Amino acid sequence: MAANKEYILTKEGLDKLNAEYRSLIDDERPAVIEALQNARAMGDLSENADYDAARNKQAEIEGRIKEIEHILANVKVVEENKKSKTIQLSNIVTYYDLEIEKEFTVKLVSSIESDPVSDPKNLKISVDCPLGAALLGHKVGDEVTVKANSPYDIRIVSFK
Image (cartoon, rainbow, N blue to C red):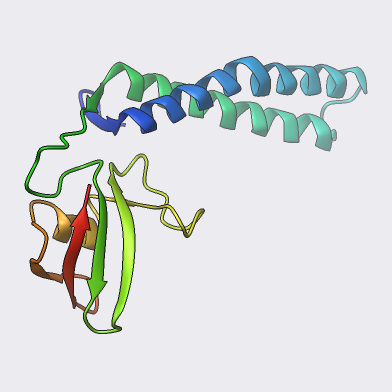
């Protein structure tokens, strides 16, 4: 984590990060503390797999809490600009892949929020990835080359 790096999030992304933080603090941290207490009650800690697993989980949770606290301390929320004539962060973009002749819709988000695989009907791609970077700043009708490992051309159909 960079010391003074500014993290750019959409309002939706900030809400999701805050919800994850609350879940870690209110639910997961107390659960792992209880698991540690139960494992300690079993006696010898030197060969206690439950204790080791709980300690590893605790380290993971505490690391993520610190990471989220750092992000929240350095966050800038991007306001949606519905009047923009060009594609920006937080826009939902429909584009047509000219090579495979298929249409796709994606939402442009920061790298922290990107999630290109969990929900195929609501793809969130980072503006830092080749496709996201290619879409930024363009208008409906523009044809753009995506500079990926195997470059390909797209046409912007719409955005909102």
